[in-house]
Length: 276
Image (cartoon, rainbow, N blue to C red; front, side):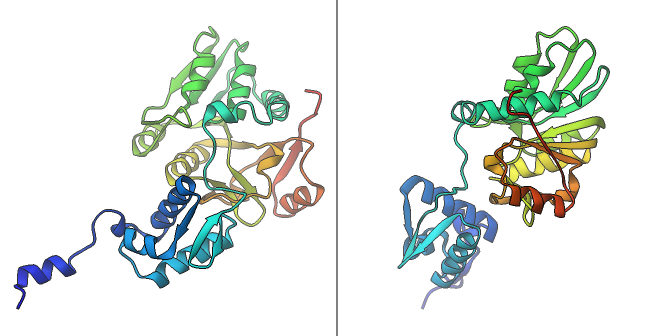
């Protein structure tokens, strides 16, 4: 007969991946899917130490959000994935649109302003537009933005500390959250992976979601910069409803129906000139 100690070891709390919460487990499923291209219910149940019905429920939820496609006994990747490409790849994607968005966003900045500049390729295009300013304070968690602005004599750059995420070239995590607490700025410019009338503003992971939410709370005015490829999309982690932003700047590629839905939901949409 097994000892009490042995029984305790068998029935004790799970370790490693098995101890994940549902949202964390679903994120881990998507990571496995990204690496392997397909997953099975049985392998996931074994990896996470949960039942096969629990795994099927996770896959159903992820399929409902367009993040994968169910197959017999498992799942394969969907065309819209949870993961974003590395910064070096994203900075060349939709570049004309991002430059036009940045040009319009720069007109909102005035001498003497204090601004929060989120990490992202579109916000980096905005940072380039801010270099000529003679009196500007920029708080940013982006190494790229800081590098662009640090030699501008009229721009004071405050770099947010935290755990560096190489794919974003940005500081995230609890330290970044705490760093932002004392600030209050005139305006925050933020980027998201998805902007949808129902889902609101979403990103691919919870660390980024937390920091972006903190940035939104620290600004008198919140401006979202998103090219039209992000409109109508929903990523894994919710950040805030549309009402949390004052307006969105996007490009002429936005579908009329998407623009109408966003405006009906209360978000002011500004479209940048394609010639900017």
